[in-house]
Image (cartoon, rainbow, N blue to C red; front, side):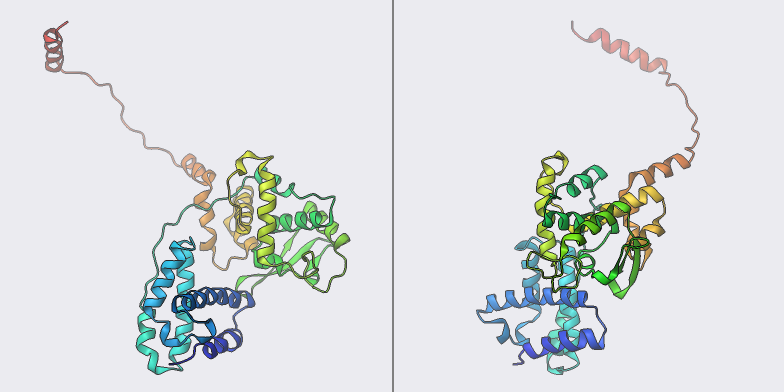
Length: 335
């Protein structure tokens, strides 16, 4: 039996960040997948995660875990495929170090990804966004922080990891307000800020103080804001905004929904998918094309630009035999 703890430790601390050069955000995403897997396997085997053995994480265990991800946790097929991809990446690392587990690893690598429907991305209208941004109480310190966070997340189309990882050194308010964002794939991008967004950021900096954290946004204890913390703040203000905007009642708002809303509104304003891809930090413009499918105005322009075929029109004329038959049927109907 091979303890899995030393393997996962070297994989997360050495292989991913040092040998492969994965970003901290990618390492955290992988770590979350393994936390879920090891907690599930330990509960199923009635042991502790630190005592798990490599041989216990076989194809059957992985399949049961993926079923748990979808049916017990309520995640979609896309999330299920992400968890499977993390497991396969770890197994590729293990197969070079433990040849005795090659058959077990081959069975795991043979598990296919699950096909799923690609639904249209949901987004908020400008009125709905305005209701969410107006929800925080800007007469309080935390209200100023929440307004600045929500406004910056929407205006910059930021991922939640980009928002909470933004440092004071990456914010420039003079002479032209802008932020330097470290995005997915270690790509940097510089984004100018609207005057309204810069005003909210300045208001927060005026009351932020000097906590030990270097991040722009901090929690009530002065520590860096976390992903879960921002998600909680967004959910709280979304419920408050629903009182003023009935369209938000019953809707679940996520940080990525603000990013989608920024992309759609920018596409409608610029009519240029390349500018949207540049703003969002997409490496491949094909990723951005999903917003073309959800914007009905793009289809309307296509319909108006194409001339419909001119078809020959005529008027139906019933033959005499059909008229005689109908008349005969009318005389035989009892009155």
